[in-house]
Length: 457
Image (cartoon, rainbow, N blue to C red; front, side, top):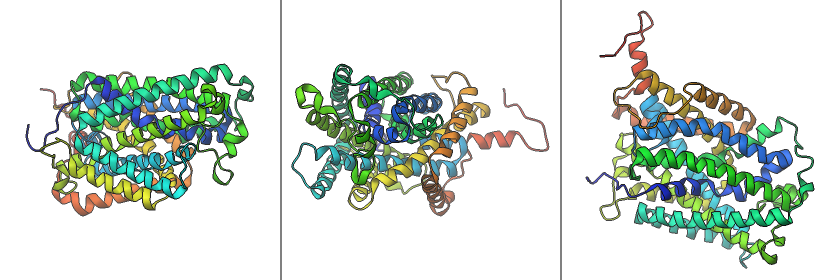
């Protein structure tokens, strides 16, 4: 092992828990009420539809992860498929999106924290900052430790969610599911685009692929297994929220008459012998902290991989000799995380980042097509995504439909991230790299004025 190598220390269970930990957070504890406000009880169907559109990217990424089990995930695959310009844009955008989501989780837990802790709103910010520092320290201290902590936390949260759902099945009111759709039939698509970011964590374990044991087996199982489990969990929990909470509270129970920020606690007073609000609030705080930990763990690998490819400064590729973690990349991620919590309206930024997540998931499907069509000699995955190319085409079209529903401001935010990534490439990376990616190989062997040249030996 060299000074720039990471240790393979994550088995299947902690790898799945990292993926689920990145999804068990705002998607369960905050977004259901916001989706309910748009489409009523049919928000349950919106979560299913979002999962359907996510699935092609999960399959595509699972294949590419077994071909390239290295740190970098989204950045690495798009860079190798479409070239360093697109790779830089995707890497920086995915990094910012995950940091935004982690910051949103730590700030969002404040609404639940206030339900059982005698704190002021100002104190909640300091608690979030303290948790951010703790998460960064945990990630510097070792991936195995961070993954083990993540596995324990997520397991406990899943148990809590199961108890919540079973209790709600007994005391919930079926009448609250009528009418099922309140925002028009196409409103389900709009709500699905809004909650799409709930599944963003499903492919983030690819960014720590270099630290996963037996990646050809564990990466596809962890990605697809965690996605399947999360669909079941989302449907069950969101249905429980609808059955328990007063519809008016869900729609207007938040600050200034906005949608509630604590939907799982709304109506939970009837659970667990009357202490449901406290129990669920504690579970929410733990889950949102777990989500932030998973976000820092995976997002810090983007600058590491980009530094290795000379698209970012070389100091970011350095591996701590003692802990075998990308210390500088983790610290940089932590500094941005703390800054967002302290100074930026993270909830708004999280909405902007969701548009970029949809865009990146669409591009991931294009990246797989580029690899398959280029027939790159070094591309030899152990897992083959089924249904090619129709599944990937569906993922691209589905992502495009969702982008039309997400609103103008998030699209402008995504455009800003694209422009920033392009500027980093032009200003720093272009002079330091001459890669073209699989797309370049396709163009090289298919000139406009001649026939396709076969590279078969």
